[in-house]
Length: 273
Length: 273
Image (cartoon, each protein chain N blue to C red):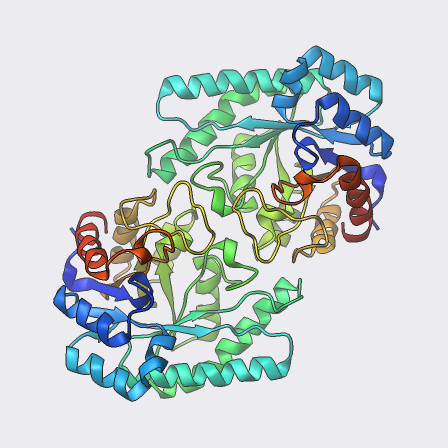
């Protein structure tokens, strides 16, 4: 049974209109020990205020969502992205986050050059790493489901992320999300291979049927992912950090009272993670 | 420039209400040399009549869609599936099809056992192979996009399909569909590895955005897949067979006049494949 002491709530899981302060309060009320805020929620109240609110609450920050989007149509666009990523590193540092999660970017608009996008991602991460190492903020590549390859992230397997980590070295690791990776028959081996660089572990569920590519993720237990099996693999690889619940759900969970969502999240976390 | 002499039309590309006879007529009128019929269209007029219509038209059958769905909740269900697959082999033989395409099946209803589903698929194909070899009908595993892993096919990479082909031996090959596989950074190598067992090559395009998981495929040129690059890899692997256009498109192409769809398909095929 998963222990609530390891639960982190990604701010996107509860009503997206909620301020960071109210997200934090809700987690504290439910004895949830950690949070993973999206940057726009941090920006809404300013980084200093966000850091203060979180510090005062006693919550830990399992990760900041998100850096990345390294691909772009030209050098200027990629330089702007790199600047923004450096700010994201600084924000993660200010919040004492365990890592900055990277959604690496898809094909630049109008491009069909997948190998070129891969190169841009590698170069972008390499360029960001120096700043991240100096700030003591580990960078976590999150491989996304292949259905996001064009628009969000062209790293779609843990194998690819592991390769990149081995190429680029210290300060870089992976965030493993069951939603994105459950289908991969090499997952068990690649999780074992990721031992020592697993920076985050994210859970939700794959619904059958799934009615929307982006906003129809399920609560743990409502779908077909054997989450406990994957949790076992992640534990066997030595990961003992927070387990983040991140559910995008426009037609179900986002419409519900955040208190109810957190109640159910805690129960399902214990039962299915 | 791709040659129309290599074009095959999957019957699902044009108005789904069209009978097989009208599909065949439409292809002949457009000087399209081959067709890939779905089984329900064959059954609508009977296998003998379908074989006669196709033979009289002079069209070749690049493949029959589809066998597979080897996974099931119990032995009885899997035995029924195997029976149906043997009939599919017989139908493909009656039509002189170049192969029977296999959509292997996802998780059995209510199951979260992905490794178990993989075993069922391997056992199902192995059991079908004897009949298929005797009938001289090659079986083509079609790896589907990972977003179909739960409901349609739990083989989602060409690597996995290649592994299975090497394990199970003669009579088994792969159908390579750019829509399902374009995102995979190992695709070039796996296509090279598939040399000698490529039984089909399917094209359409990945739209940005994609609004439906199943029924929003794009016409070649309307999306972000570098189809010509993949065609080059397939050619380098020695494949000289038909190139099948298979577009599921509930809100666009299925609503248009089949004549218009075929006109545009032929032009786009020459330009983008």
